Image (cartoon, rainbow, N blue to C red; front, side, top):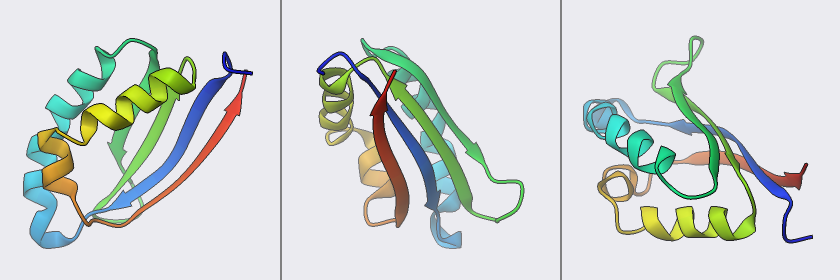
Length: 95
């Protein structure tokens, strides 16, 4: 069904030499994402257990909203700052 919510969970491991730039870019990334149509929940927080790891949790209202988010970030400062940094995400659909 096209009206199923999209859930993304995972993390991004930021190398020490890029942590300052990522931390500076993160507030704007969060603000812009929260303003997107269909963004129901979006959180990126530092891990309490692993230095340099940010835990990511997202919920979008449907596939179209998630796809629009993915498209928007490709031209964002966040994309530039985090390009090439390893990510480990799982994406699922559900209610």
